[in-house]
Length: 111
Image 1 (cartoon, rainbow, N blue to C red):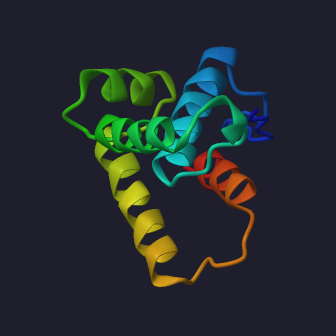
Image 2 (cartoon, rainbow, N blue to C red; image 1 turned 45 degrees about the horizontal axis):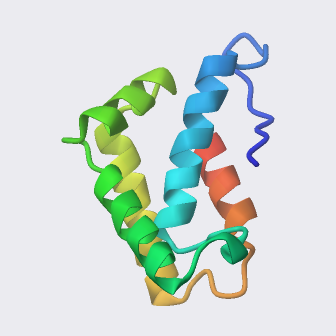
Image 3 (tube, helix red, strand yellow; image 1 turned 180 degrees about the vertical axis):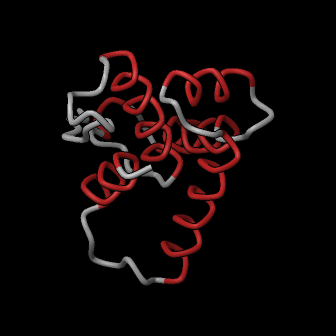
């Protein structure tokens, strides 16, 4: 579960729809990197399909991705670039040993 402690320019809590949208994007990031929090609910095949579907979801040409980015008040192309950066750094081993959930929650909150 994502709980963000980010604030808008007026130092007030973000709107609940914006928080929900950021949680959806964060979950997509988590699923795309293969971080399934409770793997007992699905087997290897299901995890693989979930990962592939999440990667396909994070695409600025996907209308649902654009919708959630709009709800989160984020530019879809920017989010895709940040996702690509995250994947690059994960694949290069620069983030080895870090807690992926905390990392991605922080990453999404800073977008």
